[in-house]
Image (cartoon, rainbow, N blue to C red; front, side, top):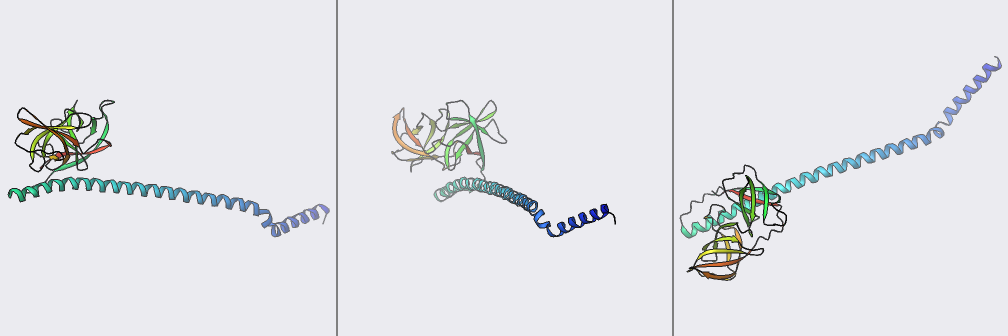
Length: 253
């Protein structure tokens, strides 16, 4: 065996022994680094998956709550009408108890003009520009909806062109509510023979086919007489503090 072949054999033997006995020492830093990378990767993917699951869970939960809110408020308005019908049934003893209103949630798009807080553009599906609709926030009268340039324009209570039929007090004195100022409403054409008191509650009468009967409007602040009629200044219940969404009454019966 010549010296070159012997040297190659000895070198090969040394490398083999080193591979057998020092593999862990040589590979340990690399394995540790790879394990750290894998651990961080798995931790990151698990964290992202948890965020995704949490996001979609919250989104589903919020959507479910919104649907429940819509159903609750729609049902609340329907029950309000049914309550009025039941009261009339016991009073008049001839109610048909036909309840088939159509109430839909509508979203506010924007104010019609900057600085005028009593007029808002609304997003209304299947909008019929030839009709006037009632606008409700929870169980409070918020105003009416009219057509402006073929679009749905909400006139909130205090707008001077917002008007609808109401009853006042225990005597159910009839009148027409109008927007009057930045603070109050006024009910006009109340027959003089009715006794109106400060604090009497004002509700919708349903005689205008805009609202059904019994929705809350406000309370009487003062009463005056003029040309054989009475006028009453009303403190409205709805304050227009959150005009983001309403319910629109599409159908009374």
